[in-house]
Picture 1: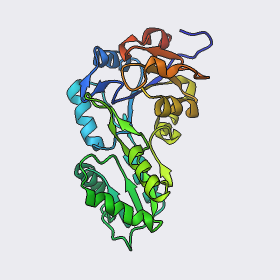
Picture 2 (picture 1 turned 180 degrees about the vertical axis):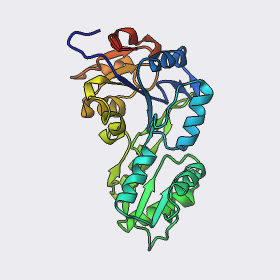
Picture 3 (picture 1 turned 30 degrees about the vertical axis):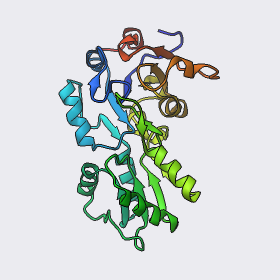
Length: 268
């Protein structure tokens, strides 16, 4: 373990591009996470809002990954909490049907298909089954300067066949068309994503493992957490050239991280 570093007391894993790609786990990723979870709490954090937290819970359980209540941290939950804090009721929610239904079930008082005239907020998740009419519905509302939030701002989402457009690409479309940007983004690199973990542990006791520089590494820097970068996802070695600050650990995949050293001195 590096000198003057505290033992890691919690590990947060990104999902897509870090532990798996298109639902297929990377070699030894599941075994590695299970080994870590025997010593410290393991959390999972993803910007992918194309599926509900229930979907991810079931996916991780099928893979054999360890879970506890609250282990999955979702930008959808942060967005819902913000809506409730501001007492907003009339929304237009741009999301896949499964995510729409999950969101509606969390708070039945919300109108998620408000009219152009009545909408107080447009909330945009990663919707990969929309038709052109839905895109127009969003545009008609934000053109009226309706408040506009996004669950996250990733430009692409990893896929086994190659990266596909994500919410950040939709944002760029509307900025190009209308010169407008969303008011808030809840996913990485927003430090709020790590709030449930940092309520229990100091930042330098938390290791975040993720495959992206502009979301994962940026989140670690903003929150003060330690960071490990596996090169199995979006970031490649050439992307590190010229960076003024490098991740603490750079490995080929999650199973290459020296967790035995990082977790030493933890009481079992």
